[in-house]
Image (cartoon, rainbow, N blue to C red; front, side):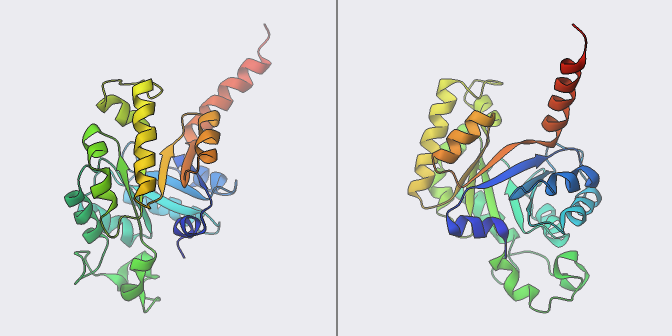
Length: 252
């Protein structure tokens, strides 16, 4: 079963970590830490299908749900991500119910959707070893849409109402830019918009997620009942600890 959808169903917060180093070695290290989910970024990280698949293989032994963010929500890209084995997708810049409907269709086989059929040659089906893959995989697919613009804020209820949209995720950085506060996700207007968006998502009965700005922000989001939250990035862990270690040891 999809571990993130299971967490949603059980009502417990799922804690995640962004992966932007595009490396199976670091992905394996992070997977061993015990996160509930890990996001493999195809939008802002130097990932290819090959690097993504290598990272999937690296984390496969661990009880963590791999989530992929493609660079764009197009059917041909979604098809490839699903075929290599991702069950959970986070699609950036979703701004309308019509767009969300197209994304759902891209994750479903005909006659429900438009996903191309290649189960015998896809890693996702065990290269044909899972005989019921075509008829059951939709139960494990988790489609998360990213709310990160003023236009998306205006359409939250319509987007959340689309069957097959499993959760909505707030992107503070892009949202801040869209609201006129580029580089300032802590701006009061941005934070007020986030609070309003999350309350509206909750009223729609859908799980909500967010990229936390720091530990205190993550704790506050968890205490507030958020369904899933990214606690940081692999790059942040490496760069911050590298600087802190040097600063702690360098003579004054």
